[in-house]
Image 1 (cartoon, rainbow, N blue to C red):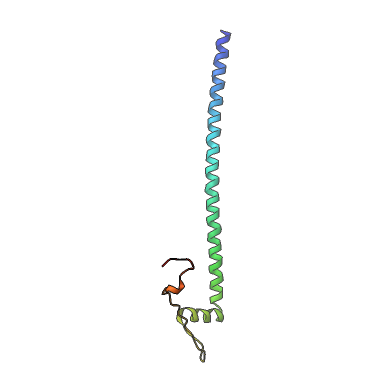
Image 2 (tube, rainbow, N blue to C red):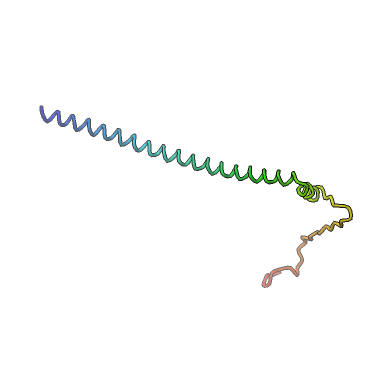
Length: 105
């Protein structure tokens, strides 16, 4: 009967080790998933805070007289009295002389 006790003890011990090993492995997987989620959200948070900072800088700039003048010139094509405004147009039509050297026509 002494051998049966040792066999039972070894079986219980191996069962305990298997359960604990599986639980440990599952916890490691869960930790890696949570770490990846935290890293992703941290990157998103940094990106959003940079965007907020840029927008705050724009609000501060456009609150000044220089910012208002810049906005009026850029979006509404306004100018100060006596200023001359030049509009430059670029023609995007492709000519045959503009082809690359060695290119067959």
